[in-house]
Image 1 (cartoon, rainbow, N blue to C red):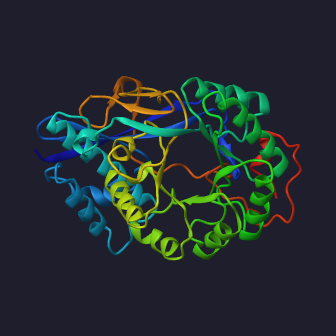
Image 2 (cartoon, one colour; image 1 turned 180 degrees about the vertical axis):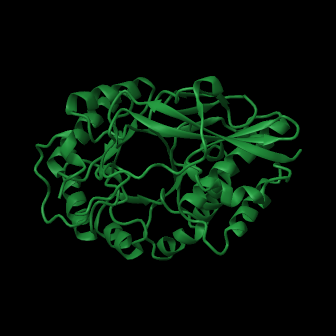
Length: 391
């Protein structure tokens, strides 16, 4: 079996709500979902997901090769961009290709990827994560009631602008999830919007009233000294890593003892996930995957010894994708369909030329100019339109 080509597709996820974080809110209730299909000479096709605009930089590393040699091809893709670097969009393309190659490997074996990777249990424990900063209190409660109906007893909220506002929301979600646990796990994600002093002051104030399980990305992703300082001055664990691309970017954080929960982004691929999980396991640290549409790394999460909780951002699938998994019992139940379990209905999805996401003027993917520079918390009363422009 040889890799012969690829198709790049674009679909949408209908959230039914606005999504965002401390850096801003998406303009509407839909987001793009990028799908990659890798073709072979035997007619078998592999599916990967995630932005892959730089695919033409790395596809030559796998073209004409047997896709079942996944880890060797992963290293070959890294070597292919040795001079120009593999971070950023190049790493996204490598991740999408890697996902599709693992899909092909498991399909060729006639078994689900979780089985190919050696997992015993198809259940992956998770936590609810509604990307919910734009929701008012009533909408927030309604959202997490739906998660509670699926058995979740842990949740991560977006926040970081006003401690009183965040405390009220955390308490409300704790009350919703208490039907499933006497002590629900509560997390807060600041999305790198603080400096280290702000982070400590903010979290310590929250901790006077709630038992915070972890604070996510309190300072910049590469700030090993800052993350270590925050970790030393709060009770909550520090979680980070979703935006780090490559094992080498984690090394300063691990050397500085700066992280409690090692996070790995789904869009960076299966091989990266497995390798980073092994590095974290060496340091006796748990892993918590930060998800992407279709939860592609759940198969890998089922196969590692230090999986903690898998982020579940929504209970539905993107348009045109059928995913062989169920969200229930507070986690993900993987199915038996060979491969990664994603079926693509191409009649409902547009074929496009692979491209990186269009740059936006504001929103959760654009860092505000005053992020990390606020002296006091923002006023609690604000509209959705203002969230992306706070100073």
